[in-house]
Length: 516
Image (cartoon, rainbow, N blue to C red; front, side):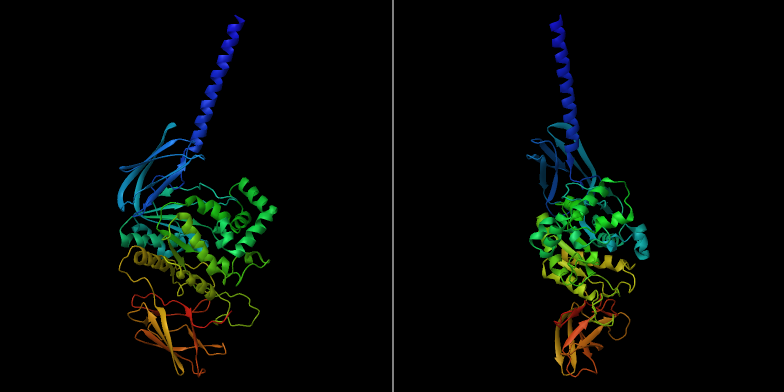
């Protein structure tokens, strides 16, 4: 009798243990059976490209993914990861459904109301975050907006690259004046759904959005990350803030966003390799705090300065294309607009002079990105505010972004570029500038062209008198007998009025090689 009771007790214990094990496995499965963060209801898929879908499940599970009438199947790897790729789809306003299932569990994930169109990531710092309500002209577009969807990545940081991020797809425009106006005009002209993935954070440097392995290609970034690795105090503070009460106070919020690498880990890495057309980058203000960077003090100099930004930006683009496995991933860089503040150069230079350490040098750095294929720089030299680093004139930025996307990516016959320098001829005491991208040169106000400066071998600059003749501008300065060089729109907040036949502004340039 006692023996029977003992056996029964053992069986009961074993049964209880099995039940607990099954319950634990089920719980663990719920935690591991997941899709990439962007695969949610109301998502937008990129048209005319291969579409990767990925996630996690139990090791060895067979995963089936159905998208519309197509189905793909794969097996999870030793880490439980899986991915499949669907063939290219045409743009469509007809909603599709995605169904994902696993052989090791009855649970099925269903994603509904999926559209196919143009998908763009919009990233950067505060001027990309700048709200729709803060830009009156953009706000007026809201009632007539349609077929725009947005996914906002939650602002946070991480010490290591994350596989997931927080956010949902909303059937509405993004709350970014630049991203929304870009999407608005793109949708109106292309007549396809537009999906915007907004991942931005004010006062963040480009280094904050750089993966750690860029230490191999960007020397100053290696110095920064080596120092960061040794800075136990900073890393402990980051962890303490992340584990502490929410929302963060302002000081902690600012502290987090001003660290290197950690924004990339939390807010960009989880997006890879979601199919998209490209990335709009409105950033650089923080990197204008010094000309060279890598100065111990003050804090804002611990990043690439104005004159290092071009090479950093180009390496950043190449690294992102590698991550997305897409050498044609298109990058639109928003040029920094007019702003009057200049850096202290230790010299008594008029802030309105083209010699001053102003944002003009950053615009020159940004323009060098077009040395890479599948890139463009959106000209904003006629925009901005002399004393406000957050100007409200965001509507023209969105319009120009849409024109460039239509022209360069969707091959539409639209004018997207303002006049660009073609060649220069020196004729005695005058210099003649010939322009491309202008069937007709004119000024927006009907007055003589402004913003031109001339210099001779001395390096002293004088405002030039200018007049338009066809596709060229003729320049002279009475004080200069032998002018050699030109700088155009090369001040912090230039006064410019030169445009082409569709009122797009001329791009800034200089023909000298003087060092700042």
